[in-house]
Image: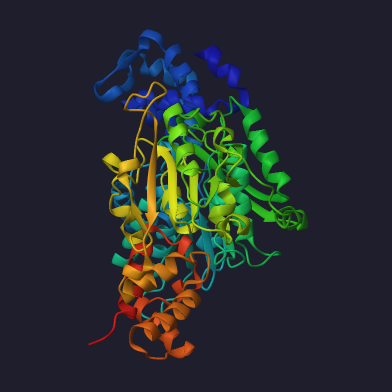
Length: 573
């Protein structure tokens, strides 16, 4: 052990701290990693060097043999170590907010479970409050707009709750906080938690690989992100944060990122990716964030305060190139990790998709990047393009009925809903994983697709999940939908359909125009534009929502918005 500690030289305080902790009381491996900030492998190396002097207890704990405690404390100079604990300049301020730490601990415990495929590793409650305190003591947040680019740690809630505690009452002054995230369960939890505590959050869906919602771009003073810890993930999330800034001179992007001291090359690659975005490191606060996990990086991450430069805007203002499957590989785990490769589709699924297009009475289009499905008789569109603005004009133009096939075999869950919003066609077939998060057994859509019932009807008779030998239980399946005939819909459902067919327009404008038309068709009344827009505002109860696109709404907000639209178009008796 003495030899190991000597090898750390000036960095020996952390490993000495591990030994000191073991002389005090039983500790788990996770606690040792979290308290020391050392990578798990380094802590395991220390435990291994303790040999027979280490005892194991209940619950996976470790502690030194009582007879060896004095000897090890002498070796590590225990009294000097404990007397020299680094001072935390935020400790006193965080200590004033113990109630908020307790609240955040409860919220984190009740939040949707972390998703490993999205690289979720929750920060501790104390860390989340630490972020809020740091933001409030370094920036004037009274009328600021904070954009959280992903928020599985609930940082947004900590910020608004801290501001509410500092400025209670109806004349409350505090930041506007917007969250964009791919996890719709998380967005619903954030929205519900904020409403129950009488604070406001703006929650929008976004898969950042496909862009930032237009209503968010260029509107924030600060952007905070705790991204996937790959060069691709950190670079992308930081770039979206920069796109969200309103002030190109004073805006800042705050990034949580940590790497293992055992693998400094990864840290260099990530930092270089940020520099390639034209971002300059105004400050780096070491070991700012602590996690309930992430033991490979010592359960810690640094706070990077990044200032955009003219090179940032030059980089972001370039047209985005057409992107293939590699553009979605930004995570460290799961099907969309940087190490993964697209799995080949089962032969029967490919054959069924090909037959679906071949049997189309009119035109066909394939959405995705699968060469085996890019048939000569069908037009082709990139998934990113379709989600951003719908089917290309060449595919969706005049020429008879339109059928589409889309490959969503890498869908993390929400792409299916977005595709059904973005595509206007007569028939649609979608290749998804057999265990897709939104679909139930046998291809019957669960409640997640109910808001789309005015546009699409599932046709489960075409559903199959087969392997290459044609056996049931394959990894992928083909699910199909048929467009609903608008003529069979009542006025309320027709307005919902009007919105569903125009998901890339501002909700207020689309709602206004559709309401004018449908009311005139239903009972002959003529609504002025101002009158129709006022009706939409009354129905939705949130004027800010009318400036958003339908395709950017989280699942739960999408459902409530379409319900409100239907009510606004229903004839009053």
